[in-house]
Length: 365
Image (cartoon, rainbow, N blue to C red):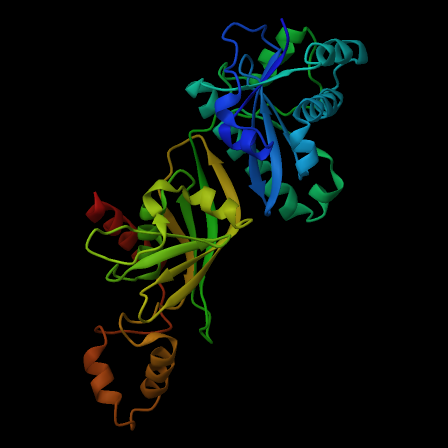
């Protein structure tokens, strides 16, 4: 039986094909003759992921051109050959495996389970690629491909072992991933346009949607969730959708994952709170932490209190600080009466921030 590459509609369109005219995949193929494929963006450039559903063995082709995407069969061969060499597979076995996928049929996938595994493989790829960029920004530019092992997404639970047993050879260079319970994004969130830095280092589960991530940021900073907000990345905007609010142009934040947002922006994003005062925050991904135990969102560190709500934005906040430093100012007493009791712009307490985070999440539920 001929080999087949089962493509998502998104990939077919990127290849210049009409999905409705492409045949569906065969349902009973030999184990290593079928590969699922999809396209995704990293650092605003196209990448391909290939996934074998029988084993969970995965591969990624980094920074591919339109021509390489259109010639998908050759790109699979090129990526597969690089992966097999990287994994220490013998030349004879590599030639046998490559011959089994020569001249593949391009088809359209209808297997939802396989598509879900491909989505997980893309997330694994993005993380591996992001780590490479953090350690050496030029690493991806020099490398033709990046190989990843999908410990989270393999149907067998151990894709490297499954692939090794199927081909009858050990894989020498792959590190077998553990089955993690949950992963957390460690991010540095910094309030912009303020002379004295106000920031929080926060752990947010990668799987959190933006509506819950918003609450974590609110609690960590000490905001009161009293105004509208939005997230921005790669020119896209995401916000809470309210039926009673007109002229909202952003996409629904409840449908977008926190890690997905960061990957759109190449590891960073912007968060805006209160469209009147317009508090802008940068979100910078510092690390992605894998844990075998359930983890909860938390604040690890920070500096200074966030500005009071409705103080008038950056200008109003700077004016407030100036007045508080001059008891003789005519506005001093009115500010003291208006501010929360014992307000100290220099104060930050991590335990208080974590209590506020849990209060925000509990109140939502």
